[in-house]
Image 1 (cartoon, rainbow, N blue to C red):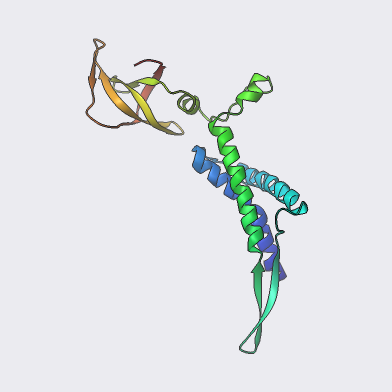
Image 2 (cartoon, rainbow, N blue to C red):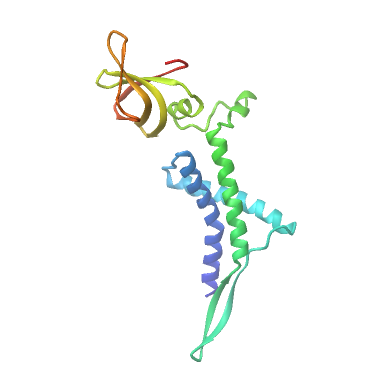
Length: 204
């Protein structure tokens, strides 16, 4: 049974990091495809969560986390009941949620632009230029499909997985060869698959 308690403690230590990773992926659309890097990131985030948690516990603002065994007698048999301090679990979950929201804001709002301006890095949170272009820009887009057809519209939603991109447009119009446009009779026009290029414009 002591080994069970140790396993519970290890699980509790690891869970905050995996919770943060899962929630950040949900809020930002980023995905970690390398298992080892996922585990390392989860461990690093768990460490950060527990540093914050330990500070507030030592300051007396949050309850400590305890996992204990309590004996329970049933049908003349003595059993061991696992008791978990749920107030500590809830406090730890709250800190994990706060860290998840903070990291999601940092990615979605591109807080990396601050160290870029300071010359500390040239990196961004975006895995692909596609992500940053649509996240930071509210512009009309002109799209050329693999078939050679072109259309213009206002981007409403976008997503990308590896080399597959999809985009939905409002107020979408086909662009004819002579430069004139014809409105597409749909409230929202979804484009998936073969997109050759995308141009962003301030005006339609």
